Image (cartoon, rainbow, N blue to C red; front, side, top):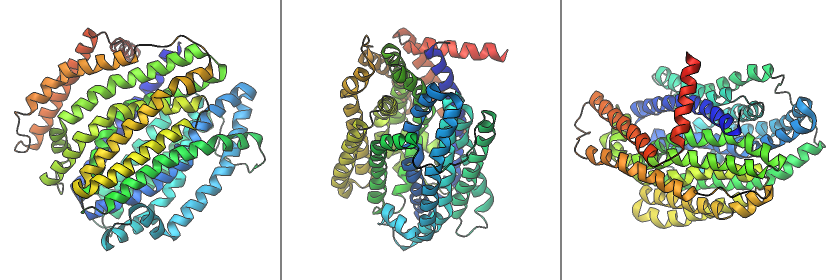
Length: 525
């Protein structure tokens, strides 16, 4: 099987599970919106949930994995599975004490963590956030171990269980809120308990698959292990780079915590919709591409490395360009249809859709970032992504602080959108010198800008008319079932039109998609 076919198969596996997770994620967010609406209680939950999520990306998911997966590939080349197991044990021996320390500090001193993330909260939101931080901190340990297990399984070519793990998190939150909000005090704490239960279920899912591949989460204290020291050296810039990104998240939460109650919740719901396309496709492609990129980088196969990167970036553009147009043009109908139920008011829907119109513009640069950053890591360059992230942070903090006073949450969203563009441009400008030339000389894969323009043209001629037609429909007055029908019809027409226009514009991903669907149909028979 060729690298392109292998990457496409892996990406489709990840995307399939991620799609199920995102659908359940919508049901999770719908449950939160229906029960809690957009107010002080949900603001507190969003801030409290951010705390373990930031640390999990800083400690494991965002930093350890980008260095761990390439080193697992190197260990396989050097000593086979025995070397891989030794590396895993040493990593766990260093990681678990750090997790125990962070979880303990968060549970004993939750106020310190809440103040670091949302010092602008009033008394009610502050107390709620502290209470839920205590509940959710053990989630950090569970999900960090899930990330390590996922790195091992991905290195073995197993992508399903790690991709399916978020499904269980969504099920945990939905079940806890639907079944526990009526008797848990305060009711919003049910969502926090759901996060913890979901984390335990995620970890439990990975263990049988690790055992099947002859691995286990058995730590081995070996601080003098040379591979562990090498990993620590690689992690330094990666921790700084991801730390800068997570500091960006903290800046956003801090600035938003001083805004009127409910605006942080609007931002939360709009972000969830923005992340849908990114989570299903862009992230799936980057996860599937990283092991292949790492293998080609280790083998100094420059031509294959460039081909893999080019395929991943173009496949991401093929999805994010029409998604950006759809989110910007159909934000109102999307938010009204998906969230305007129960305690989520028409005012909340309007606030959220206004944010989504701006955030949709960031889809294309964020999608490119999700592909470019792992490519830098695959060749061991963790410094340039740090500088790019610093530029993004400076843009968010500077522009956000300048605009938030006059435009509140809308000014902050403009700042984050501009920051994504700054980061993507920085990574792209240095890609050839810092990445491609480090692997070796090879023919340049040209046509990236032309491919982007063809995707934009296909999206404009197919989705543009759907957006214009939606202006004639009064979604506010329509019944819930009618909204769903109209939105589903608009999405179906737009998607079909885009695939047809993409074929006319000569975009090759259409043929790859047709072949992938054909293979799955033949396999099902």
